[in-house]
Length: 400
Image (cartoon, rainbow, N blue to C red; front, side, top):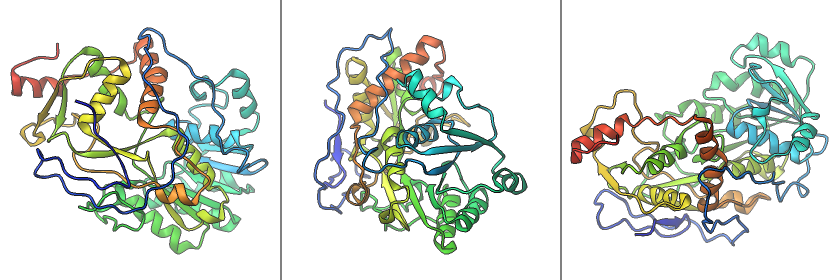
């Protein structure tokens, strides 16, 4: 069976095997196609990680940030690291504010495929500011006398994390770009989520909702970004690794529920380019943008697509009821068992941005530049405890 993936503007009909799945209503006219990287699943040498050359954004020259002073809060992990790389590619002078656990030039701050020369050149335009963002006094001291054109808050989770920075941006006349989350939306039978949809005041991302409201009420020039699940090489959320490890071992893939829940994924490079494109872009002022791929894919489809990426046969998929198990603090599956995807059409229409990675190409990039690297270095988790519980209960089998 092939995996199921749907373009987000389409009409989605619930699979007949799932009485709980909803019928989704078309909410957008189809956006004209953009170029994207599409994988054709070449044979992959499982013993060799393939490093691609550093890609310069196709929009870098069209929206140059040459000479702009940009502050990035975070900037040394996953999406923040890629954002710093993207901003530097566009000519910006980047200032990274964090607690100083990694210094400028640390080899771990290179994005996959980046040459030493390119890394050194952008580091010459990158400055580290060491401060704890949760300490207002330390933050004021570290930023005293500084002025920025754009401030990116890449890791604020609650209003108290961001309020002081927002006030500073307002005083400076800076554009504040905030990393929110598509997790703020209220569950709905009408999908995909679009930017005007109701939000959930009891969401686990309530702090991000509060911050968005403060941005609107403060009068600061701002843009909010709401990504769904972001994936790609260097992801500290082991979303992809969860599938790759099980497929590598040849164990069944245990998926909660019926397996037909649709989810949205977005490649980290596409997120970085979208965020960079917002910088001092008047069209983006006061706006919220959903960011993900153009498609939604079922949980079962994710497993099949990962297997195809690895050159593996179609996996055995086991469906289970998560309510039948007590996993404690263990996370048995990397996605929440619900439909969760958005339309990126507003960003595609309004911004000088396109989605360069489809799911196949993005997963291949992650497999080659993350999983195989970790495998070679012996850094895989290989934790199958919850799988053991599920398989023992359902079929008396064992992962070992």
